[in-house]
Image (cartoon, rainbow over all chains, first blue to last red; front, side, top):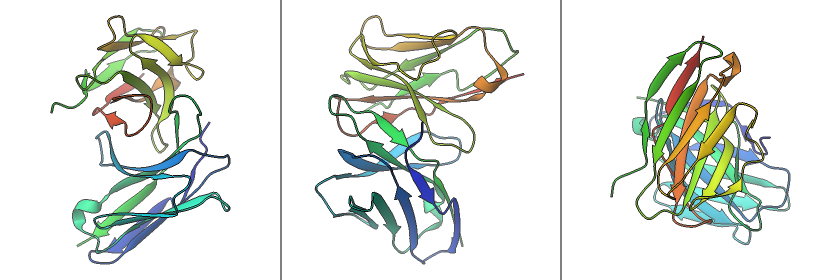
Length: 112
Length: 113
């Protein structure tokens, strides 16, 4: 079963603009992770935010987590053509060993 | 550092045939995962190994899917017999332990006709 729901399913913006993707989930989590997948490739880990954290930055990426609303957002600032990809949130709800449950993803297209 | 290796990259078979996928994780990574990703969806965990033991196979269709990691290093995933709905990308991932970042291979794209 897939816990996360990403919104929007697809997003198209101009190069240089900011892109925001949202993820909602249903159960308590240990952490939430964001991954990127370029067409025909495997997933690449972007950032992990723990359940006791509210915001995290990595380069042009900013992730927020609101456990009371069971939601997270990924902001990509100053977008580039190379950011064109699918972005997935994944929640880890296991207490023993990590078990990631992925959402359906947001397809991001950056237009030059 | 070499990444997660998978082969083959593409496979086309007819329904009811058998198929096997191979994965070699990053050296030293104890945990290995197999995911199924159907077109337009996120990956779904099929099975998780810690060294050569199974940690979670609750979503593995055991009547047709099997996986092994005999020496705690590389792993094979087999489907026998294949169904049309098995058409998907099969992703292998590894991590140093049971927590934290997972590193994904390029995947094997399976088409069942």
